[in-house]
Length: 203
Image (cartoon, rainbow, N blue to C red; front, side, top):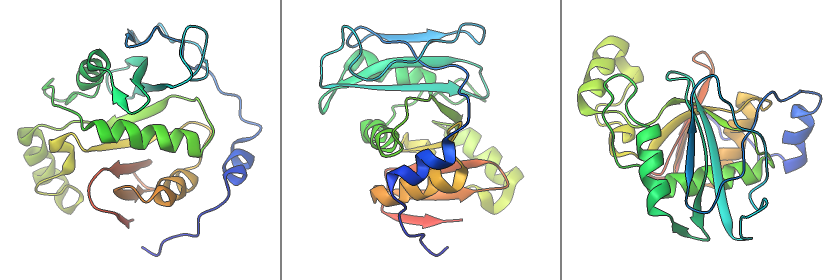
């Protein structure tokens, strides 16, 4: 795939303008994660909300397979909070088997940078996070070349996402502009893959 020229940040916002975002995320106390059932969606707040120090870094997600939501301050500056790491490990578990893996902290930083690049607090929609070896083998056998033999999902270094209000193309271009790891564009499957491996792009 030929790499697209990086559009200015305002282009992303322009494409997203006019869309009404449904639900968002709630501010959390430092280091405390809050998981929600499918019927209990948190509200929207910026990173440095009430009670959060200026260097607090937050992320929020909706899992499309489990229906779960999570919003949390995951780091203070560059220091990832252990409690948040454990909460995200569980949230991004293999949704087929329930296996919990260790998610690469750099993946959180990548997603935080992507969120800032797009200037949005909207929760990421998660299609796939951690993937156990058994699940990866099964998906590889049923989906052919679409699944790598040693996918970075197995190492907790990859995530497949969407972002409501942002087109897949804009999400891909923003991720590519960061020059952090790999970016895969899956238009038919309706998601963008990002990982913390070597810098590359496809799709």
